[in-house]
Length: 180
Image 1 (spheres, rainbow, N blue to C red):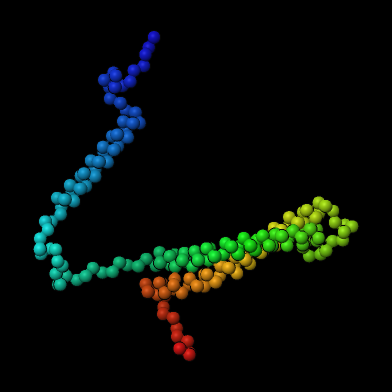
Image 2 (cartoon, one colour):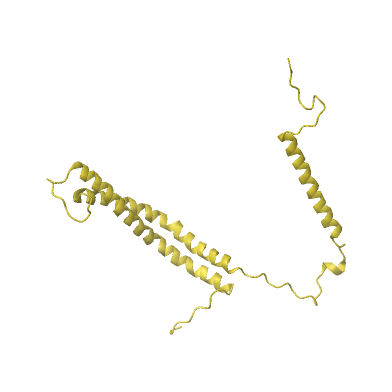
């Protein structure tokens, strides 16, 4: 009969996942200590001369502006305002459009254009027409509802985004109107 013993019981070193994590932690600590030591050794001693910048030294140049990041930030500002305010209109428009569309689709048999007489409309045609009408008119209602509630918010956010782009020199100054 063979009894399994652990590596520690046999006097061997363990190479399992726990030991691997311990070695990785020790390695990370050693690397961090080496980085701190290198930074400390390379640092100049503080003195009264280096504490104050001399007036003869020029100021550091301004960081360059990344146009792609600035345009993305401005777009996200306007799109975020639209998205925050358009959700309620999208939901209301979709629900209203689906309710109206179901009725319109049911009486037109799904064509949404021509009324079907009661003698030719089957229950399956009415159900199918309701589904088609609810989907079609619900989609249009959601689109219109989101535009009605979201576009004013986007229009209100645009001047701030444009002013930020202008302050970074990415768009020209607005042209003054003839009555300004």
